Image (cartoon, rainbow, N blue to C red):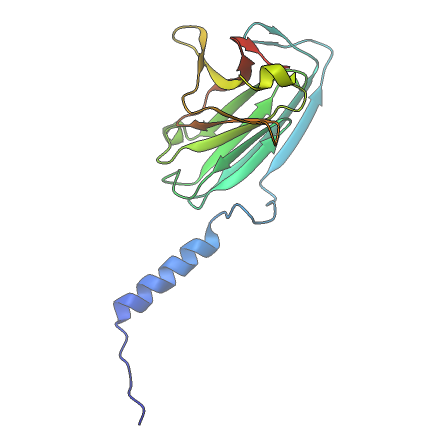
Amino acid sequence: MLRHVRIPKGFVLGLTLLLAFAGCSNMPTQPLPPSESAVSVTSDAPEQILGFGGTSTTTTRTKTIGLLGGVISVGDFTVVFPPGALTAPATVTVSQPDLARPVVNLGIAPASANKFLVPVILTANAKQMDRTLLSVACISYYNPTTQKWEDVAGSSVSLLNLTVSAPLWHFSTYRVSSGGKAGW
């Protein structure tokens, strides 16, 4: 004999809303949406990035990241947003102004989104870096208040993958450094 199971309407409604919300969010593994843009601009004027001599090439990518996280990469840098890092969708801009230098500018809009609930992971491809320097490398950020580079707590090096990573709680200008100087 078959028994009918009664499912509360509130449960069905909640499950439907959850599935609709998940279907409208940005998954890290989804194909790149049309809102993502990559720009490569060339000019004859050199750029100065925090006192570094620049080149004439800028690479920038902008992408909307949702509540379920996402990934955005430019040049030698990749930023991974785990699910729950943001409280609302935000537009993220990643720029490596000089592809020959290990410096990346990270921006997010609206500005109120520049404080993460879960750390975002910044990973730098350090294959160009001298192996002896790589073993003591870290990610640093430029503190505009002190006008100095400060090491990011939790930076780690993968000698196997030749990468340097750090958990970020906010966006700023970051670089790979070793011994207080920019790497490669």
